[in-house]
Image (cartoon, rainbow, N blue to C red; front, side, top):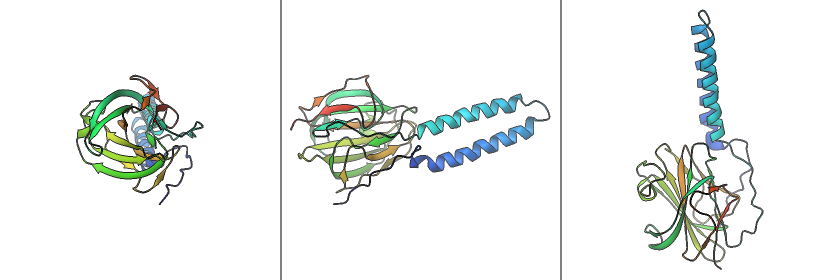
Length: 231
């Protein structure tokens, strides 16, 4: 059984490396051009362009930040938030891709200001990984879970309970990255994947699970306990 190596915490996520490098040179080139265009007339336009481009680049850097997080609680029967964001759905639904029965769904919406790394919500083993091409509806719409571009990961806990996590692209997001592979061991504290620029994560839990979050509550990935599984 393969094991996913624990990711050492960089200050910025590796998924943003190319984007940030290209963005830096674009900003630099834009500011150099604006300086030579406006220096004989007035430098105020140059200063405005420089300020705006710096703010935009700062937002981009903020998006790809990768904070150091270690879960210090008991992981037995514990389900943690897979992402930073806000809980937008807590309800019983039909899950028709893998379980084909009723499940409790907890959905977390990530805005562009949130950290977009995704963590494994439970300890266990990866059973299934499946990617689906689809549309790019707004991520908070109910139909996004079944119609949007998405990636499904099923995990089995040491107690034999299966948890399904679905990474869902949004209206802005255009790339879902999933690190999990079938037969990998998975652990809370490890990255499951990354979604670029606004999205949501759905977690499907067995009926009877004690859900500890409510709609509108904010979550911190790998820190907020969203549910307790019954033994």
